[in-house]
Image 1 (tube, rainbow, N blue to C red):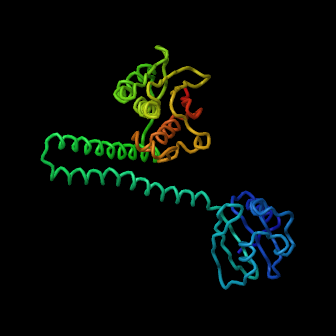
Image 2: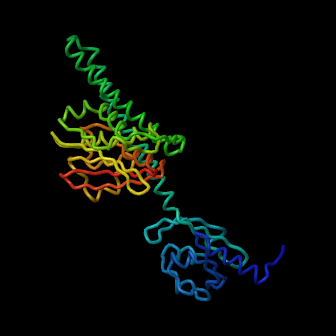
Image 3: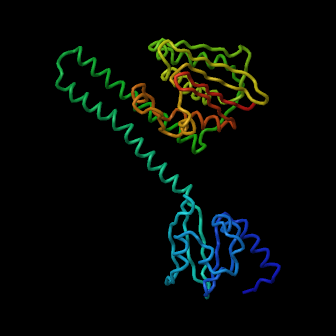
Length: 332
């Protein structure tokens, strides 16, 4: 095996400083021989080389791993400044090599996956339980009027499950980037009119007025199918979470290299603490209210992914009991 000369060794150590993983080397006397830049930054170490590890390692978990004379290699998960790290200890000759990696993003992903499965199960379980009850009641029901009532309830729950499955499929394809963005020039006003037609029955139920203020000649360059899904989700939410006799207004305009779609309502608004979370799957500001108005809890997550698929951006302004304004910026 070729032994590295001083120049090569210096280059190799410089390379270790570029890693987003921590490396600490301790000799047989428990003195620090080497630390890379990441380890020094995460552990707030100041010129640690040559010092006994007990003088500078303040994290109790890491201290314990270095202090113990373990037989063979070891692996543990520890906490450093509210982040979870995977620490691996190797014995090579008379040295201890400690390697640690931030696994916090992976832990967040694991929790999100767990929450996702739990939420889907819950969202499907509720309508299935209602359907079961309706079918059992229909079996024993003789009155035709009551039968129609129960069948209407069953249909409502079937539609609820259908919407959830459709939204899950759309979201899964967007996240997997399976949906190709096929861009064409679209007259935005015409697109908004189609959305208003689709949801007019919901607006009538709440006496919410729909206003299309998009200029006749304003064009947007994007995927018509996906932008329709985006707009429908925004406008439908604006109606559902509005007040009786409220307003939903859609505006469109150019802002430098972007075409902006603005959806504004006079609804219940969103608390400021909830604004960073509203694009998360199944997040609901008010769970009891969300259940009463319906919806899958996936709409804004879909809006976010469609915007990102167009290399766009989203801004949200909201005041409780005053209303909410979404701005979608789609590049030209």
